[in-house]
Image 1: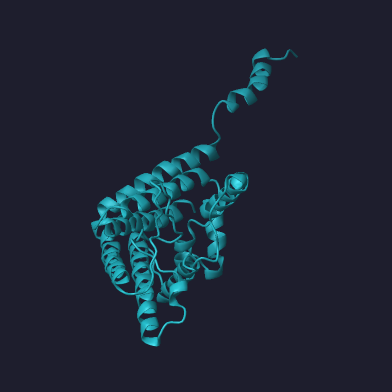
Image 2: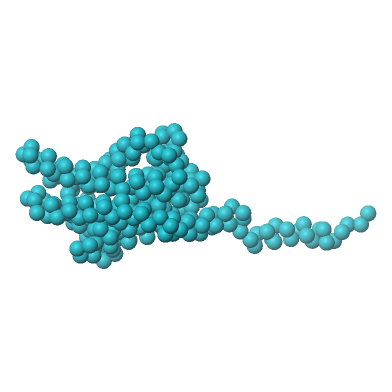
Length: 270
């Protein structure tokens, strides 16, 4: 029996021929990223009322900024003088004109303390409610009110952590540049893996599996998620710096897009 040279040549060339093309998994991930962006835009265009919750939240936070500026308690602008700044928070929100750390609430008279705490609770409630309404309306899932309380609790914890005061020095010197780059890489990795956590808190079953679901669904989508995080952070800071209307624009635009992106990508990356 003679051997078929065509078969032998085909067998030898097969690995090299297939190596020229991306795998099905790579093509699927690229398609998911493209279809995810298209679906986010389609949802925002087809449901204009999705912009309303964060529009209201932006107006509330603008009023809170004015009250912070007028009262005697110290405030600090959340943005530095840098012209390029990424302002990103794990839950959908925007950039405000003022910020008040917990240092300002120490040793206050009871009435002043209640006023200051009330402002911060109002800010947390406005952002939590807007995020909850937007994510639920952008999805066709039924979500219990208990999940809303869990979501608000998570927002409160993150809010408190980011307003701890001056205990942590974030200045980076030239000598620690390599350490800073390494820390940035770790933080970027964690931010990507936990990007879907806010919406997983609403939809994951059981609730305890929310971090695992976010970690699992984001696997293989690091580049598009990181690009989305950077885009959200840059847009939030840029819009927030606009005089007079910056807070409303930042909260309405970034908060809504972030919330819709969470819902859309959570479903798509299943």
